Every structure is written in structure tokens, then in C-alpha cells.
Amino acid sequence: MAYFSGITCGRKFIHRPFITFSPNKTWEGFIGGGVFTMIVGWYLSRFLAQYTWMTCPTNQFTFYPQALECELDPIFHESYNIFPPQIFELLPDALVRMIPGVVEVCAVDNNNGNLTACISGEISHTHDHFELVLKEVYPVQIHALALALFASLVAPFGGFLASAIKRAYGIKDFDSIIPGHGGVMDRVDCQFLMALCTWVHYNTFIKMATVSVPKMIYMYKLLSPSEQMEFLEKIKSLN
Image (tube, rainbow, N blue to C red; front, top):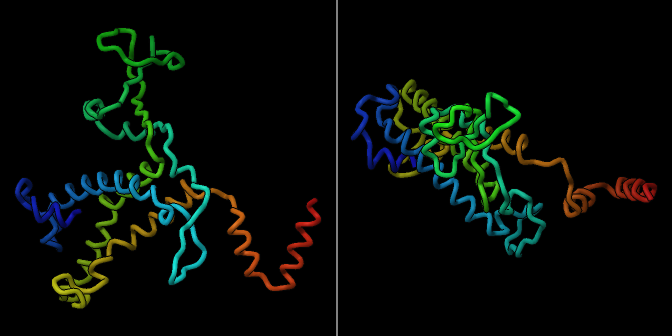
């Protein structure tokens, strides 16, 4: 997305260089890439959530894959979600009010226990926070937005670091296996930061400390015969 935005809009609006050691990078590519990445992440995550190969885990890979069936995680079901109001505090109030569906919540007579939707011109109303209720939205779409935002604002600096390393060694690309694009490392240099962010985000906000029956059976088969017998004895003692 950043590459596409840079090609179509590069240096047409902002003429100041973005990164001195990587002159081909532009502000248009950075900003436009962020906007389009979040748009694609929002709709693509909803589209992929319809397919079990994207939502059901598997413990093994085969050359002849079969249809997957599982109980879908709640993040792949449409639900009623309240967008975190703390995020709106990072943005100017005038900009937040322009977002479709946002409701401004006010305190009546400065009483934070008495909140209601703000009425323009009402003297007794003072701003408390903004709310955005998302209906018929997959929770995975909200997670996709968070990852897309990181991919747009932070992950590119992995590429900038790679550019600095190449410039220090006086080389254009790490390799030439891909004509016009260098090597594989030149294409995935941002993925180091992105992979770390995805792992932390998944384990912090998505992963639940539960074990499914198929996973228990799979783990049981990995045990030695003596460990399997011990496991069965422990299960019997629970009854």
C-alpha cells in the first residue's frame, strides 16, 4: 500500500524528503499507505473470516487437505462492540466529531454519574467522552485495525533500518533473486517488527487460556506409552 501510494502520489503534495538515507521514500507513501492499509485490513479481515481455513486451527499439514470444521472463536462472530473511548482522546475533538456514528457523551451539571448524549447549546452539559458503537461487526476487524495501524506507523521503520544497513555497506539490495526488487530480505525487512507485534497482540488481547478437545487428543498422542497410561489414570481419578 505504501509502495502504491508513493508511486501514484509521490512528492505531488509534500515536497520535503521523508528519510534522508532512503530518498525513494515519500510522505505520500507513508501517509497514504497507512490510510489504505487500515481500509484493506478492515474489509479483508471480514471477508477472510467467512472461510474455515482462515478461522479453524490445524495441528498438521497434508498434501490432500480436507475441509476444516471447528467451533468458531467469538472474534469471528458478528457482535455488538464499543470502540475504546480512550483512543478518541488522542485525536482533536473536531476531528472525532466528523467520524460517522460517534456520539459525544456529556456530564449533566458536572456530575460524572449522570451522563447523557450531548445537546448543542445546553449550558448544563459538559463534555465527558466520545462513544462509538459498532453493530454487526466482527471483533477480528477491530484487531485488524490495530495491526494495520502498527504496520503503517511502526513496521516501516524496520525497512528504514534495512536501508541504513545497505547504505552503510554501499549496496543497493541484499540480493538480486527478484528482478527489480532485490532479494527476499529486501521484500520482508518490515516483517521482523510486524511479526513481534502480531505475537504480542495475539497473546495479550486474543489468546484465551483454554484447551480444546482436539488439541488435547493431539497432545495425548505425543506422549510416550507410559505417560499415556499415567495420564489416563489421572483422568480416572477425577471421577
